[in-house]
Amino acid sequence: MTTRRAWLTAIAGTAALPDATLGQIKPAITLRFSHVVAEETPKGLAANRFKMLVEQRSGGRIGVQVFPNAQLYGDQDEMQALQLGAVDMVAPSLSKFGRIGLPEFELFDLPFLFDDLAAVRRITQGPLGQKLLERLPRQGLVGLGFFDNGFKQMSANRPLLEPKDFVGLRMRVQASRVIAAQMRALGARPVTLAFSETRRALASGVVDGTENPVSNFWTQAMHEVQRDLSLTEHGYLGYAVVTNQRFWQSLALVDRQLINLAMQEALTFANRIADAQNDNALEALRQTGTTRIHTLSSDQRAYLRRAVQPVQQQLANRIGPAWLNALRVALL
Image 1 (cartoon, helix red, strand yellow):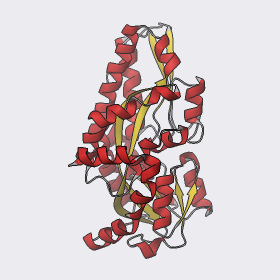
Image 2: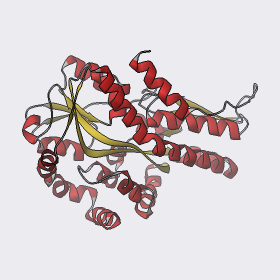
Image 3: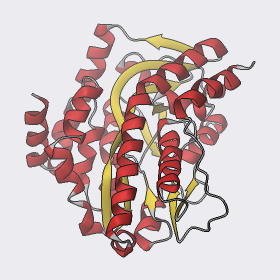
Image 4: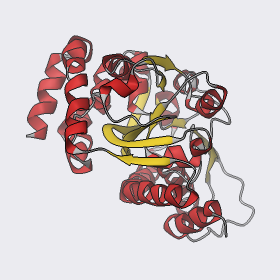
């Protein structure tokens, strides 16, 4: 059994849900759910679980079409596609909201802000997270909730353990001013690319490295084109599930309730498995042996933290001092 097959077998038990007995019922409503990552990631598994729950509980009356791996839209255009009604639901990383006039969501991009996922969930599952979701209708969106993909690690073709190791590297980033500022603070050059283009860019040398949770690194086969993975845990990667406001309002109340409940269960499931998926991916990487895995010492991590500390001060006005103050209070 290959390492890849072992990985898929391991997640199958986690993701499984009984098949619905729907016969040949044609859905009266079809919801199009687009995302940019692989099906075996926490996001992909959550989307598929949501589909099964909705179709089972509606008896097939509501269908969900899931389009993974940027089959329809990529990082650069999925939010616009949602606003235009070309799809009905997406689950973008929180970095994406700054580009549509909601920079307060970029507070999640600040490096070394959260100690663990429990700290993250004090925000996403608390009053501050709800206030953030309440900002979305101004952009024609409705927010259904947040979920995790865990903490990001740095990769390149050399170990990235101290700020000097980043100097001169071209590092792929999402379209986030905060993440770009983080890379510049480390001495690297940020290069904004869609997630779906990242592996190809790494393979061709367009960029030298990137940051990702281990599950994304593994499922995109980045270990085949990156020799070193440094376990920096420097930043958080999370998502918000959003739907088109016109589509949402067109649904009957009972259907909105059914869809929302199914989504809340899918998000709880995703949060439960996020750590396990990253742990499984790290073990698969170790078994494959194509990528050297480096664990930082406490001193090395402290050096990185100090190097990127100015980013919070630089981006405070863009994100909003009131949002940052509320965040700090919530994390106490």
